Image (tube, rainbow, N blue to C red; front, side):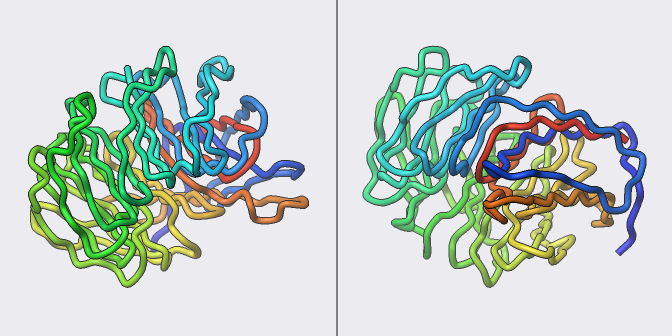
Length: 330
């Protein structure tokens, strides 16, 4: 695989949850002209599993096994709110397109919608099994939830009504909505991947799946490609128009999160201890950032989730520790 030594004018903002009581450091493979600034935000946040960024890029919200939701102001670094949201761990969090609400999905079998400004619970949508994934529709009217009961449900959440339900062959591990709002992609524990028309939750296509659990899905900014990462360390990109796979790669560990850059030129591949930047068209490796952790918590600080901020920054969380914001510039 061809390796390049720099990404000109690319600024990557990393929000890292790093192990408590440990010393953390990093190094870059294949790049020497990197400038770094590092900013610590807040204290410890135990057991982070997921995050979301508000559409205006002001707030980053994290949740996980603590059952709490915590939000920080990315500019000031101050906690904006923190509260106990569920009775069991939280698997997913997402903002509505207008940023006025955010939703949380939990192992307690509920989806809750909250008012962003007041943190008031607006609705509680009860399911028959653990809720593993959650996304808002592009107009904010509907919520799509995926469960361990092998179902995807479409909710008119303000009315607390289910409008559509489809059954899958396995746990629905992850959901993603295309930027143009027309497609929902679902990734299952048995490795199958499907796309659905977002308006009516009607099956749109079936992609050749993997042999392992689907861990992450990401649409390209133009909604034409879908990136898939699984628990067997594989990364694939599919052209949704042709139905063909256009690239694949095996990483050195489980692929926790995938995200396209804002302009679609790069694919950020987040594994447990590395961030790899790939060129979307060629799958050439541009840069690898490797995170090392020293101390009494060993490898507990592995990567959990990653998002792209409105300004193009890559926002990542690890499983434990205080938030740090890193800017890498080459």
